[in-house]
Length: 70
Image (cartoon, rainbow, N blue to C red; front, side, top):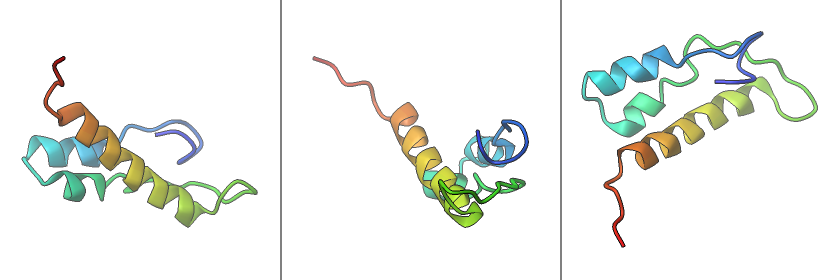
């Protein structure tokens, strides 16, 4: 995850939840754990944490979706 602390961080809590078989929404909900984003003119810390959850859920859904054939 970028912009969630002084350096990019790995969403380990999400990885652990997925490996344990958690629902994708539950796993994505852990994306902001252990983060410390700063507020700036582009967004508040709360907004950044919310966005991490939303984008992580989208990424999980895309990664785990059945391949689309054509």
